[in-house]
Every structure is written in C-alpha cells, then in structure tokens.
Length: 152
Image (tube, rainbow, N blue to C red; front, side):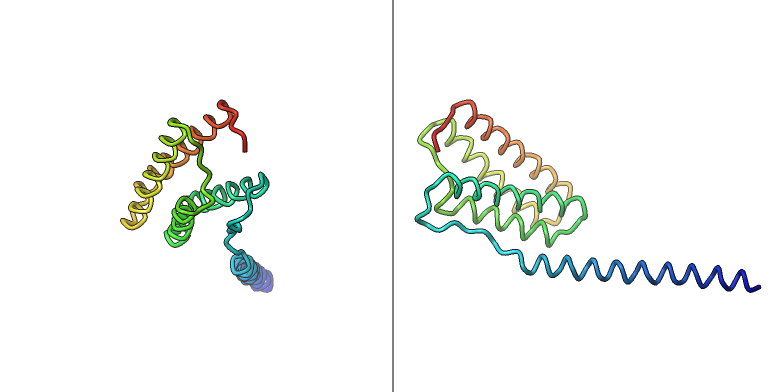
C-alpha cells in the first residue's frame, strides 16, 4: 500500500512540477515578447548596415508568420503580417531603377496584400499558401539582386 501511495505521490509531484516549469517558461517568453521592439530605420540612414538590418527585420516577421502557422496562432500571424505590410510601405523599402526588380517588388507587395486577406479569413491553408508564395517572391528577388550585383 505504501508503494502505491509513494508512486502516486511521485507522479503528482512530477505532474505539478511540469506545470510550474511551463508557467515559468510562458512568463519568460511574455517578458521577452514585451521587450521586443519594432525595428525602424531612421529616415536619414542610408548605409549598408541599416539596409541589412531592415531586411533582417522583414525576415524576422516572415519567420514569425511561419511560427504562427506551425502553432496555429492567428494573432501572431496577424501581427507579423501587419508589420510586413508596414515595411513594404515604408520609405526605407529598398528600390532600384530596374524593370525586373520593379516587377519582383510589385509581386511581393501583391502577395503580401493577399496574405493579409488570407489572415482576415482565418483560413490556415490559405495563409500557408500565401506564405509560400511570399517566400518564393523573397527568394526570386534576392536571387535577382545577387545575380545582377546591385550596388548598395
């Protein structure tokens, strides 16, 4: 009888401690999320480091869309997509006077708008499709930039 009671006590302890650990992890994540600020470039900063940081910020938000898709977190997806839309409308959005680049940029902006529409529909399959299209747009544009050897 004592062994059964001891075994049940151990299981209850393990079960309770897993909740405490999860609670602590959730609190730490919330603190980190609260501290994370949106990265915005100053209007007068034209150096390569700033542009690289700008693109990394965009990539961070696209990764947040992916993380939201994996977890089914529509709020996370919505917040990330709104940031991506803001970035593409910002004055620091990198542009080149090149027809192919302009076409690729327009495709990205169109796909981003469609992604935002899919988020409003709350359809994860539609969001996943638009996310895939947006990722393909990013890949195609960056491939073009590498091949064309644009000067930053």
